[in-house]
Every structure is written in structure tokens, then in C-alpha cells.
Length: 252
Image (tube, helix red, strand yellow):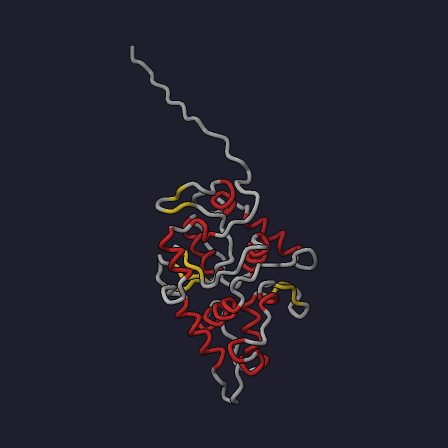
């Protein structure tokens, strides 16, 4: 008579929320990566800041520039206002991301052609402007007209996608502090973006990171600048309210 061996897997209960306050992904980085982010001479994302600065100060064919309105080195930009994006726009009847605001400003004030979402120049300008608010606490107001987009982004964050049938919530809420290959899962906050990704050796917008996450879960991503990804940005930025802006952060 053949013996039968039964294997019992013990599944430990996992809390629905693994954290009670937002902690930046910076806290989950190895010391060497933290040091790289902190040192402006070592942080490769600063090259993009410099590119954005050059674009910010470059005159158009009429001799106008972003600096003409917003001051040399962005001296007339308010870091607190930068930290509030995405904001509600009555003109657009919906959320306006910082990248969209920059694109609109170029089109209206400099008479430039609009650029596609996540164009390299827009990412560089967004990185530069966000860097001007480095250290300012994220403060997205979703108590008013942005609330429907916050709710939509939250729903998408919790929606299972792809062949792995997982959601953002699984990695960044339920399994925080556990390892995925060679890295520890963090809370998935957006305060470091645009960020330099060591995996690609290039700067990544927040929507670019969304696309990477969708690829990881073997899911077909939405387009950058889509209503879905903008709603997700609203939710993620508000979810990280109180965290300091770190742009350009260093991430894997």
C-alpha cells in the first residue's frame, strides 16, 4: 500500500494595511543609494535638473522664456503651490498635473506647440520645477472638486490587473517590508518623482513608473497622460500628503 504524504502550507494572516503613516521610499533604500540621492554631485538625476534649467531659461523666437515670468532660477515660483499638484482646473474641468501646467504655460505664454505627455523636454522641465520645491511637504487637496478623481485613482490602485492578477495595493500596502527579488517593497509613494531609475539609467516620470509596474504585473498599461493614470497620480500624491518632495529621487 502506497503511503500518501500531505503537505500543509501555513498561510499567515496579512493585515489589510501594513502601515499607518506614509514613509518615503527613501527609507527603504540601501545607505549607498541614500547617499547618492543626498549628494547633488553624485545624484545622476541632477543632469536632468540642469537640462530643465536650461530649457526654463532658454528664450523663444520672441525672446521670451519661462524665467521671464517666473524669475531667474524660478525665484517667483511658490514651492507650496508646486507641492499641491495635481490641482483642479476649472478650464479643463478636471485635474491638472504639474507637467500639464508646464505644457499649457509654454503654449499660452511662449506661443510654443504643445508637446505630447512625457516628452523629454516636459519631463526635464517638470524635474527642474519639482526640484525647486525639494523639501516642501506634498499637500494635494482632494476635499473638493478633485474628490471624484481621487476616488477613481483609488479604485484603480486596488484593481487586480494582468496575468499575475495583482494590484498596486498588494505590493505597496499588504506586503510592505517583504522582499521582491533583491529589493524590499516600499509603500509606493510618488514624492521622489520624476526620479532617476538605476534599472534603466534614466530619469522616469511618475506615469513612466506606472507603465513599468504594469509591465511587472504583465498587464497592458494605459497611455501616459491618460485619464486613468492622471487619476492614479491624484490618488498617489494625496496618499503621500505630508512627505517631503525629493525630486530627483533615486529609485531602482
